[in-house]
Amino acid sequence: MDSFESFLTPEQLIRESEVLSECCRLMLEERLRYENQAEILLETGSFSRVNGDYSLKYKMKDDRFVWHAKPFSPNENSYSSEVPIPEAMVDKIETLIEFFAQSEAGFIS
Amino acid sequence: MRKFKLVTVFTIIAISIAMFTGPVNSSATTAKSPCRIEVSIAHISKDILAKTGRRAVKVDAFSKCNVTQSKVTLTVELWKVGEIGNHFLTLRVKRSPGITMPGRHVENFATFVFCKDRILTNYFGVAYSKAFIAGKWQFAHHVLSRKIIPIHCGT
Image (tube, rainbow over all chains, first blue to last red; front, side):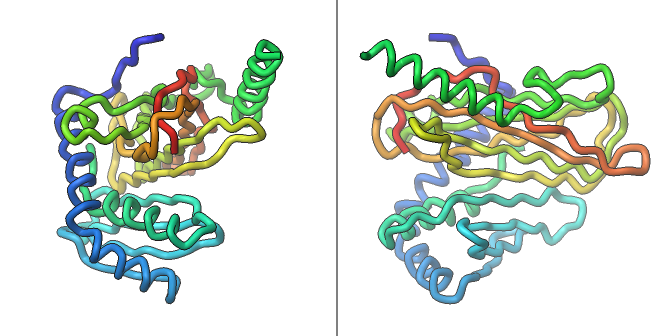
């Protein structure tokens, strides 16, 4: 097995750890809210909320779930993400729970 | 039979990589291009495993130019190698609105998916970018992880 050489600095590795840990926490502790959000998104096709300094917009586009994180400050980075929409309803909900958590967990920069 | 299956799998991987690779090769440096992209090998985030017991497969990428650029968009995709075809898992886009000075990295270090089980699976990353350079949009072609190392992470 080859050893993996990370691109991240020690500070970025700490931040990565924080973001992924936060993502895990959100998936557990905010599950009920995410299930409600998933219901809205699947019914209406879109959903938005404010999270800290970012406006988060979620939508379904073709066969993918999409989120956009737009900062209130024009000088900050913006982010987006896409995942395929699964076929089964239970998988859609589980995918959206991880998707919502990733969008709120913060960014590694 | 087993050898045949192994050869088939590696052929599929090789064809898949060839299909993705654009005019810029995976080392991503050409004589013409002032910019390059590097994509990591898809890997398990070890720290999150230690902290939470959860496994996540992750791929990182950065772009670097030797000229001033602005409005840089760096997209990173995570793919799973399948027996019939490859499967798109997720993508993450980072848009940097300001000016990026020569030699400075634009980094996209947040493309990951949590594992569902420990099935040995092959993953790879794909990254591409666009930026405003010298008055016009420049596009960097798709660059892939330079290696695929099987990891215990089913998705």
